[in-house]
Length: 494
Image 1 (cartoon, rainbow, N blue to C red):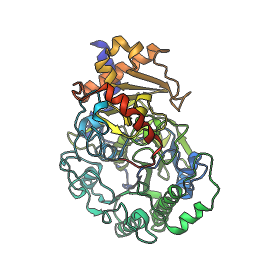
Image 2: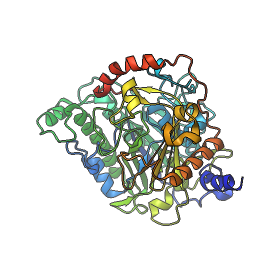
Image 3: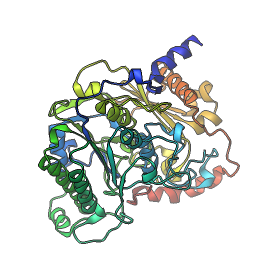
């Protein structure tokens, strides 16, 4: 019990119910907050990360003007759960949004466990950062994708946003010069800032780009069709859509400067999950929908003049649930009464001062997603899955995956040496997650495993344990050949 107490005291300090006494001192003037959230933009898809084909001059300039987090993460491997985590400041075990639609996607005969069903949207009771900022005098606006208004959820106007601009369906505008509604969303956000320039505001610019169906201006597409392909990236339409997204970022940043608001505006740029299979994320393993680095590691930039040092870099692992407490701390606002936050304010890191106390970050996905990813697990590639039920911890240089099928059905801890329930990687030496050290370093494996199990218990995480009666090993072997042919498809699945 003493050991468990130590683990919980150390790890679960991230989940606190803050009191007014713990709130940061109010700033003399509340900063404006602008969050630019890309859709399906991978860690390797931007120029400052070394893409040999993509061009993102405005995002690259933002990186030079602010702080780049080299280990910035989304809290889930695909769209809706990542957005639920971002807005609520909570990991998936608290809001139960695990996937887009079913958590039982893929061949049923290949699913060894009955997955935990997820929620279709973010319930109104989940206080968002927009709720908190609005209650403190901010005018709040969302421009673009919400993706959380299913039967279990509600609309953004009920979750703290004064202004809601979603530009029709947003997915396929097919308007000349306005692919993926990039420009209509950006222009609406610019008008909102101009109208509210004399009061603190929140802009959540939640792009539909670059999510499939890919679209781009004809002039941009021609630019990349005429460009020599890179060794890693070469898809002209993918690059063109990314370039247009970057152009929208440039328009927004220019407007902030024209309004004279640059010095008092905190700007964050990141993405909801990893890139699709159309864009290699190497050296990262995997892509959107999985919990290897390619599915969750993101471009992550914060610019706040006078606070962040231009051109600075931070290697501390951070995650999008950290943005809620960061926004509160920046504005000098206490955490709403009774609200549990799983993240930590990034303010000490942004200022380059203070002690960073958090030891680990976590992920939990208790279901199945179809469509194999590059360098996925062998069984997943053969049977057509991006991921199976898994929980993950990143602690220091180390990352551990706990695969629940093998853990629940193949002997658990007693059979770790042979059941492949755990994978352990040293990301400092192996960012590509190629060398599984679970059998070579059992001490570190057991340390992270104990921490992860303690976190699952403390968050009341729902873990699949029931064997799937439809599981058929012989059918899996038969279907495996067909599933393997889908390995190189370029569909941008949710």
